[in-house]
Amino acid sequence: TNNGTIKLESLVNQSNLSVGGAGLTNNGTLESNVGGGAGDNRRFLFGSLSNTGTGTFSVNHTLEMNTASATHSNSGTTAIAATKTLTLNGAGSTLANSGTIGGAGTLILSNVALSGTGSVTNTLLLGTASVSPGTSPGILTMASNYVHGAVGTALNIQLGGPGAGVGYDQLNVTVNATLTNAILNVSLINGFVPCNGASFDVMQYGTRTGAFGTVNAPAGMTVTYVPNALGLTSTTGGV
Image (cartoon, rainbow, N blue to C red):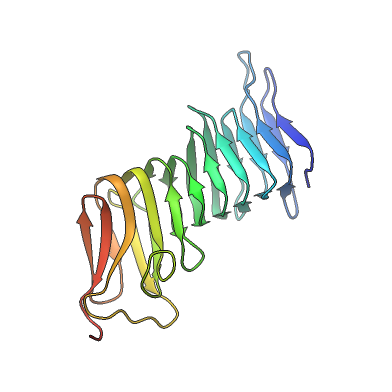
């Protein structure tokens, strides 16, 4: 547990922070800082990270978190500096967000499942990465660009009633959403049976590039793309 300040920084050598067991709980300040010189000054964090509501995680220098089956969470503030990246890579790893992952940099998720609410900055999905808005249900905001960068990446949506964030999940992308050839998975929860003609705006965006290549949805559910939203409409069910 960190209640003070941890800085990953070096002038010429890479900086590694390895945490075992339950991982690192950050209640204070965690920084990945710029080094210098011509050496290998990359930054790595191995293990699970929980950035709590009082925690501040500043990515001022590109950082990679490479651990399989890691359980990451952010309920505090994570800031990724412009031109920098925070990469989470690890099969079976998860990131639960209820805080803010901001800044002008980019969050790269490779084979990592993102879930929760709150706000997330520029996001690139690679490998089999997935996004599941809310906590059954809820709204997750992508406060910039959102990119499905591989055909195996997925957006998972649950429908449990009317009303975005109350009855069903919604992903809100404030700038551009790139969906080309990715997967949209839609499931019903809590015994919900949508009536004929019921509609759900499960995704909102400023602009859109491409469309989902695969849609896995309940029978009778159709997908419609309009200029600023993706809607699901039920063509079966009761009146």
